[in-house]
Image 1 (tube, rainbow, N blue to C red):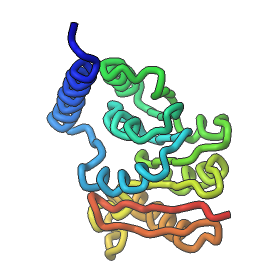
Image 2 (cartoon, rainbow, N blue to C red):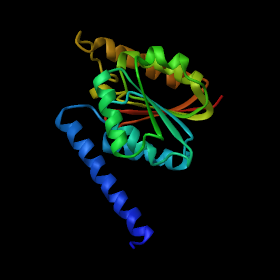
Image 3 (cartoon, rainbow, N blue to C red):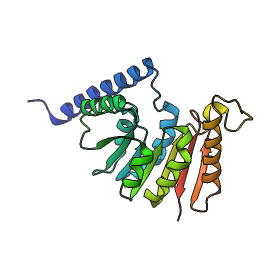
Image 4 (cartoon, helix red, strand yellow):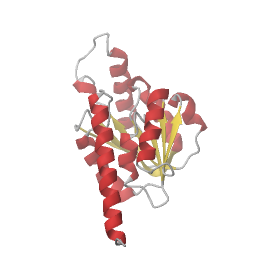
Length: 209
């Protein structure tokens, strides 16, 4: 009979292979997923925080939620919201492949509508969805987040447009709303914020009151 440690190692290796396949397929299909250097920065916090309740706004195919699940508290849960019905279905399939159905809950719907109906008490909230909605997501996230909790927001520098003089019509709405978001998180008395130039810009805000 094989020893338990070998069985666990084999299962771990198999899951790592599945995760690598999920990542590769997303990249091949040009589905935006969490960048490696961004994940590394988030990991520094998640290893310490070990969140019990984690909220993700923007599931895509479930890759980031699967990565985050490694750092949950023993009884931790991730709620993740996805607008696109087809991507939400794919995310559920991927999560099932990773045997994480009891740890990751996919909510298909518009986050603007879903967020007001969630219960408070999240330890970590990750925002990675429609850039033009970031200020709205922030408002709701602050209601849902515990004092001491962290809000991560990805892509806040948006190809360098946000901190530059970009004003072209094509991306103007997204850029303007991201500028508003950055102003809100950096000037709020309730938050301590830093913005890292990793990936496409990562904002890290801790709720201090």
